[in-house]
Amino acid sequence: MPEIARFYGIVIKLFFGDHPPPHFHAIYGEYVGLFNIDTLEMIEGDLPKRAKKLVMEWATINKGELKKMWDSQEFHKLSPLE
Image (cartoon, rainbow, N blue to C red; front, side, top):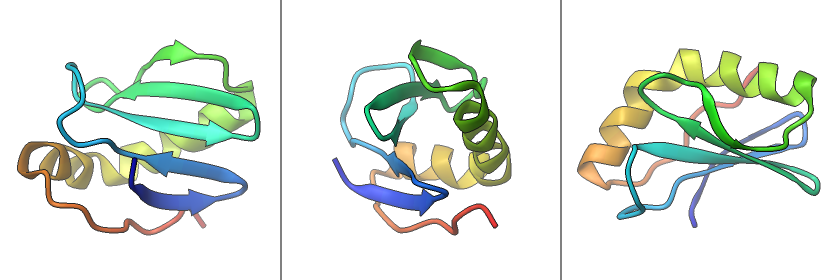
């Protein structure tokens, strides 16, 4: 699963051709969250509250690019949250 961003110990990955709905994975240590690209809600996982908030902030900024990447299946790195 390609890594598309990394910030504050959180790794964001996107797997092309994965199951619907369009989503990305956020990994923080032993915690994992699955986020819906369209709604930005965590649809599965156990990320701590602070990590979830950071991921949602990052995803809000990058929502358009995430959707384009999912639809086109063309991988590229996205800027980290600063």
